[in-house]
Length: 554
Image 1 (tube, rainbow, N blue to C red):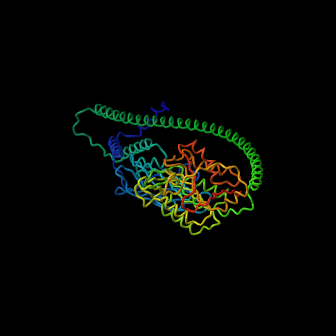
Image 2: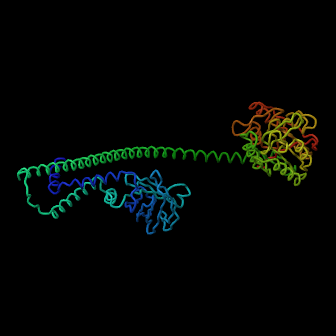
Image 3: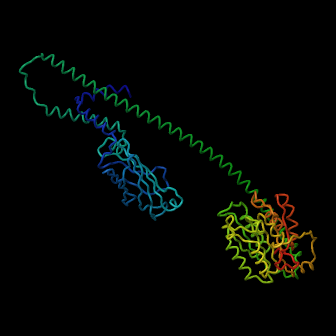
């Protein structure tokens, strides 16, 4: 390539007359183009989608662009519909505006209203921008349907011609310089007046000719050097671009190789996983059949353990769980405990469950009022509470603390006295309270409290006559997670008290008395938490020697 440069330069020099005015004008123009001023008027260029944007089927085309009074307006077409976006150019030479237009959706003839963002920066008489459009499902997911680039430059500028032709701006500048020099040469040869003979001759013709030739040679040499520098810069730039392109090709090839390798590994893992899942499905199916047969056998055995001649009545439950306190420290497991207890009561024991989650004082008292109004002597009621508790030592009274409770403000608390009153007034035959809260033992201690303490002895499996007697007698009993001390919130999914109750009810397959349930859960609670559960009958609430009976329905 370099061996041909002298011949090219010689041809250019023969065709051109030295004209430093043109060079100076071009240099002045070049300097002005690097200034901070954004040229007003019409701008040209293109608006194109990215080649990789296969999900976007719409066609974008630039119609016009105008810069005026620090404002940019871009008019474009999406398919056959014309739209525009305009706005202020910021002090940092940035443009960022939104617009809307109709766009054709992928694999469809329908259109949707698209929201599009156009943004970019003016730099060296080039507007380098980007656009993206959202519509349909992509807008709901926060993704992009169409995106592409915007390139603009002043009309008539070197940069504008380069954008339209795809040429390098330096090549465009060189072509313009050559054209300008040719034009100047032709103009000078046509308009130059005939020289009048000098009246006085100071130098000889030979000297004048030599001086003229030397001057022309010097100017031609300067032009040749300038053009040579331009060509060398252009070659260097092209070489740099080619090196960058080759590096990008190499990088993309490496990425593709890694991607294929990853795909191969993923395919192998998927194959192994599919094989493993197939084996697991076969094992699961076999175990499911075994479990179904075992459950069928257990149902038969369980039904045989439940006397058919006893009317146990209907079962109801009020389950309360509070984690989120507005004015107190939150709990971790109270709500999950409540949901788990409610689920096993309804699914296995046939309870009609009312669940209160993160409820306030009014919600709890209203629920007790509804039970008081609707339950009859043929009903059984279980009240489960998981949340904060409080002992007012000065007033010798215990409280449940609902979600709206405040420290030192009893207006948001539920007292033991309120619970006792409701238990006494509710007409249900059997009532049991399961309280999993701090200081819940206050429910069973001392004069004026909800309970009086009793020792619960473990009983062997009772005969049908005993269960019939327990089913007839009225019962008001309470089981608490601890005594007069704080109890632990759960470290796992459930508290120690709730987990022990859930496990015991799950494992049970016959009629289970409340006292026997207490004997089952007492040791696990003491072992897994620093607290001792309590069980007793409710004082002054109508207890008549009965006990709460859990009867599996499935």
